[in-house]
Length: 318
Image 1 (tube, helix red, strand yellow):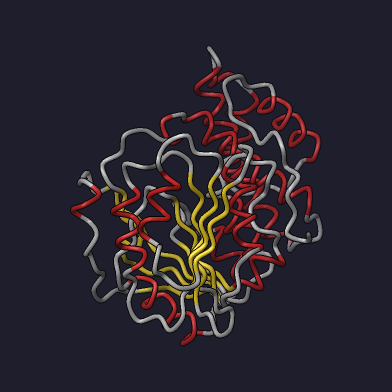
Image 2: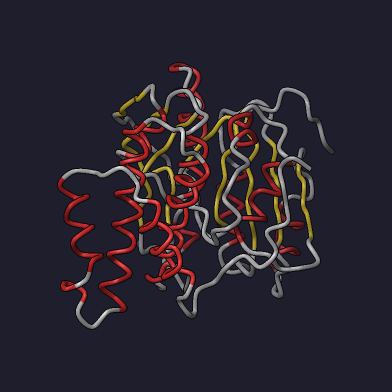
């Protein structure tokens, strides 16, 4: 049963072979308290385990559920954009299918978003080391927070990762969601959204609980460097008219990701131009050097054993 009117929060979950986590993840998700009319959108990326069957079982009698069973595998960024495009709520909260939300976290984030008229609210995450079933009834207590009316500078000066966000749907759609040129969406979503958002709040509370992990992409550090760099590189090249301060900070983050990659792949990293550029930008962020930006991008794209989106065809404009 679907009621698209007056949905306060649309939850968007991408799913790929997470049958071990899903029972606990879904229990906490479906028990989020204090919401008037939530929507639950599940985008399966051609799972080969029982993930889809588990979602169907747990959502059988739940209103406002959308389950998309895709016939091809495209990766995280295109699939999360697919879910964003289907969202009807005023806000969207996205989650990985192996992360658990404290049951009062969404309500707390929604309340502060409305109180401060902020388009983006972010919290912290915690790697708990606990089994998924141990986390399904967790809550968050009182917390402090910081607010920045300039959402872009707020994101560039903070740490916004691990899908710990609540974002106004209109902003997500204007930003076109995740950058589909980047496999892992953690860096690209807050960056792209902050360009269009009014106000960001960072709360000092764990709004995402990570169970004991049995394997994910975070083990490939080069993948993280690659995707972090491309998120900032693409944003710089796509938005050359952003304020100079923002462009300088974005360039520093891109250079930092390049230096981390160089340390892992070069025999003499401290004798490289990457180290010099990194030091200069660490002391004082420089205006983007387009030629060096393209050189860094070329080096990243030449890396082997990196997962990339092979079908970046989905568009929020469709």
